[in-house]
Each structure stands twice: as C-alpha cells, then as structure tokens.
Length: 289
Image 1 (tube, rainbow, N blue to C red):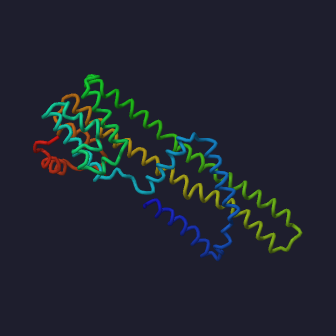
Image 2: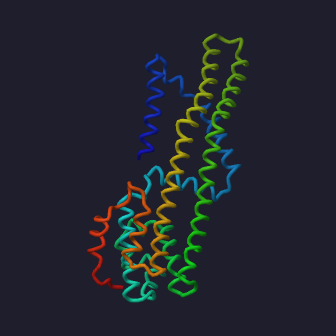
Image 3: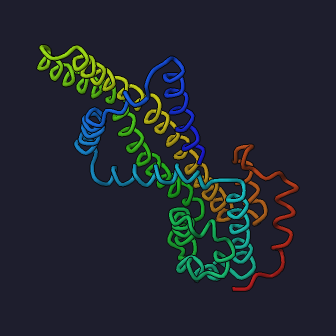
C-alpha cells in the first residue's frame, strides 16, 4: 500500500506542478511514446534476464505492493512456533518433531500460526534445518555451516531481480531519448505543414524524454531500492530461524534459543523481554503432538 501511495504522490506532484504552471495535462498523454519506451524497456529486460529471474522479479514486486510480511506480529508468531517446537523436542525427544517437520501443513503446532505457515520458504527452511538433527545425519555443531550456506545462496538469488530492475530503470532515460528522436523524425517529415502541427510533433517528442526520466527516477529506481529492503527483511527473518535452531540443536534451553533469535532483530519488529516472556508463558504447558 505504501508503494501505491508513493506513486500517487509522485504523479500528483509532477502533473499538479505542470498544471499549476499553465500546462495542459492532456498534452502529456502520448500513447505512442509510452509504447516505444515501455515496450523497449520490457524487451531489454527479457533479453538480459533468464526466465527464473523474471518470475522472481514479478513475485517480489507483487509482495512489495502488498506490503512486506515481516512485521512485528509475524515475528511474534515465529518465536512462539519455534518455542513450541523446541519445547516438544526437549520434553519428548527430537523424534517427536518428525511429524511436524515432515508434514508442516498438517502440524498441530504450525496450524496455530497461519502467518508463519503461509510463508512457504521460511517453513521449508525451518523444516530442512531440523530434519538432519532429527535423523542424526549431522552433529549439532555442524548445523551452523549447513544453514549459513543456504542463507548465502538465498542472498545471491535475491541480488539478481534487483539488479535487473535497476538496469532497466537506468535504461529508461535512454529509451526516452530514442522515443524523442523518432518524434523528431516525424516532425521533419511534416516540416512543410502548419506551424501548429509541427509544434504538436515537437511536444510529443519531448514528452518521450520526459516519460523516460520520470519512469526511471520516479518509479523503477525507488521500486528497486524497496526490493532491496524487502530482500534484507527476508534474510533477517531467515537468520532469526537459523539462530534459534542452531542454539536449540547445540543444547540451549528452548527459551534461551528463542531469546537469542529475539536479540538479533531490529528495534521495529523486536518484542521486548517482557513481551516475549508473556507470550511464552502461556505456551509452557505440556504440548500435545
């Protein structure tokens, strides 16, 4: 929602200022220029990026438009889900976690926390982190390297969509110039026509440059920066899971493993110690499978 508000502010400010100065907004509506600029930019994006990166970019833009899901409420759900899992594993043995890890969609614990359960990548990361410990395939002190390697791979994948969007944004002024040059070509073809017609063609050509610069610096570049923040938020969320799982696997009490994760969060999403204690106190009763 905040992105939509920002786009409205940019549009209203530019068009409002233009109208206030006596300009006619209708003169900026040049469909042909828009088709040239946006079509060429989209074609360039298709050329530069593999299909997977294009799909990832689209998914991230949709998530950004909806609003980043990594809110304080989401972290509270995550910490409670982690605590319940760890408490069950401490009381009944790691094998008791198997049914929850192998089938998270039917897990009685995960079902209590729909926000976390709907985050498929995070659920998968948590389950994949616990499976080797439950199966006894690796030692607890080896788990850190395993999870850190997966997080590094995630970070590398996150770079590509932002890089593609940034390069597309940087190219927009150039495509605006292309549209303007084509407009001048049309103008030269009408050089013997009425002065009003020549003026119309020149204005349309200038609109091409205007659109290229506006789309680049008013919309695409800010969106790329927003996606960087979104990627960082996802990595922090994933590291929160990793630090808790590593702490629990190496012998920390469930509440301490969760506390380690809490302390690694930013101040805007981190519940304080009293809030965490109040949340977990209600979960301290014996957990049923």
